[in-house]
Image: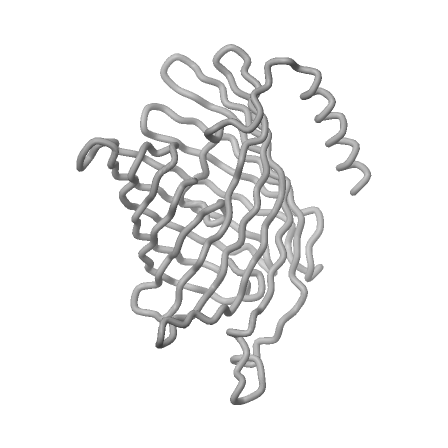
Length: 274
């Protein structure tokens, strides 16, 4: 598999460098992250309402190349981010319970028609998950709730076609996992989602957005999760800026070490689009 990936990357790179109209390291993303999808690069905090828990996101996605074909754009980029589960303690302490790492590459193609756009995003990624010292009870000298660490990692392909018109964008995703530990878990996932942006709702350059994502994940069995997100974006929806938002999530825990736990959370968050 590694040899095939290396060969594919070499051929793809040769084709790209053979073209003369490529823009390296463009200022913006060709395909902006889907806001309600829990597996997107973010930079910020998500505080759970009524609980002493929070999520910390550190990472980004960057386009390395843009190739323009008339009004259409082909892009290639990289993804590097972590999403962590922390507890809130006194004296401004936040012990880390669990952390997940994701890194990979992506490609996108956006077709700009007269009144709408559509396209496709492809991601090939690796995720590994780990418990951290915040999950260990020093006084009892044992892992909390007797939930022990185990090896969790997966490599997967993800394909997301999308359609956008004016301030509306809808998408669907199919995920195929070609390697996973523990080996007994399923190797496919499916989701649909959308987002709607109302620009200049309060003042110039401050807009309101609503988004939702429904995902069917194959673990021991198929499990359904739903994420709703709404908030204020300072800046255009697909540009650099900051967001303050409310999120409701129900379904399986997104952290690999806690994948068998059901969660039902309302949260307040802040995110910086870099």
